[in-house]
Image (cartoon, rainbow, N blue to C red; front, side, top):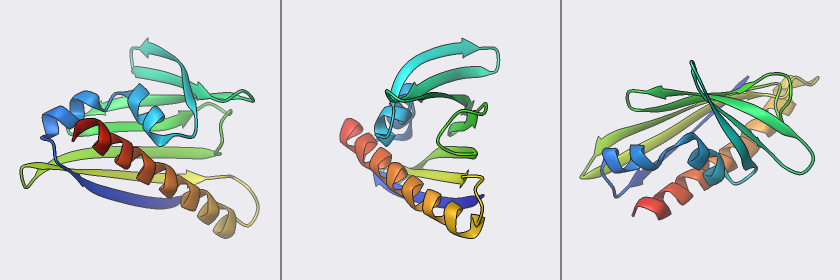
Length: 136
C-alpha cells in the first residue's frame, strides 16, 4: 500500500469542523462518488457509495479527534483503502489532516499503487477545500 497525507488549516474551531465531518459529508467532499445509502451498525456507520456503474461500502469509525474509514468488502475502486481524518486545534482554528493508504492489487505495485495514491491525493485535497468552504 502507498500512503499519502494532505493537511490544511481551516478558520473554524475543531468542534465546528468535527460537527460537519460526517461520513456522508466526507464522501461528498471527496467528489469522486455519490452517497447511495448509510447503514448504522454496531461497529459504526457503513456508507454505500458509488456511481452508475458500481457501488461499494466504506466502514467508518469515530475517533476522539476525527474519523477513520476503510473500503469494506471486495467491491470498490481499490484492492484496499483506509483513511484517517484528524482535526486538531491550531491558531484559533483547526489543522485538518487526511492520511490515506491505498493499493490497487495489480501487478507492478510500485507503479500502480503510486498512481492510485496520486489520484487519492487529489480526492483528499478536494475534500479539504470543500470542508473549508463549508465551515469558513
